[in-house]
Length: 385
Image (tube, rainbow, N blue to C red; front, top):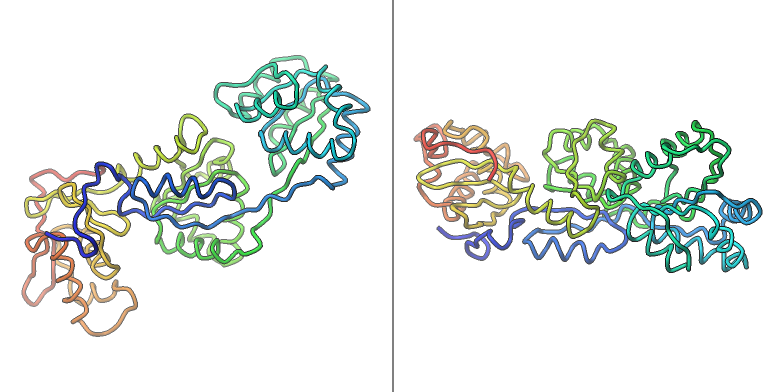
């Protein structure tokens, strides 16, 4: 058995070998991509958003002046970058000292460690932070208190939080939203547009999201391209796995009934580990000709050895594995080859290359009928690793 690319490799230290993972992050995308590549993934970079600071925005300036003139009783910091940006903008307007003075008399809540760090860096004291780092737990904490007539300043993290702010207002609070920055589509949407097409065609195995606006941007571009249904189906069926850094990021997909993969703690490293554990576990493993054969996005794992395949032999392997043991005709295999064509010799060439990678006995020729996997159902077929 040999690999059609570089020779077989063990997947023990590279659990994402054979998978293509798309990264939509705007910030820390190089770090996230490197962590995935170290685990063997083929990474596609497709930034879905860009951050537009609002340091000269009239809405934020008005909200900041409001907080100085009528200090909030409670202030919620949802992100570190957002809270720091607010303090920097206030300094630029010569309101920084007055704002910090007013906030020092308020109850300050931080959604997570980064927000807490930004609060402390501003010389302020945070009073509480949830272990889950979720906005839902912050909201639950607030609703357990008497909010009637209380002013609550909420630093937004790139988009409105209607579920959060509406619940506070329903409890009697006066909410002061603070739009510290907003998200927009990247100036060059070409990589994201290509990713939308790849998701619709099931040409990536996983899309990693680190912010809710990135999810919204990808779905918006899918609608513009007329591929909204295909993208939704790819995520909904699990053909493409959506992985989100936390519940806030996942909320748009989860509300649409799409199951996402999330780490227990909203950290990039934890997200990568979750992806590295979940993707291989979702793959089908077939027993054929005495070998355990597992299909991945652009590779086959045979008895633990990763064999990367070119598109044509991978298409043949996928078609044969769809119904293991059943004969697939040359015409049907020709139909799934990339680029199409009418010459069945292309099928024979793809099968030859496939056998060179997975072993000659794994793929059987059935004279005048086609090909099939040397499937051994009595040995026990497995779903997952």
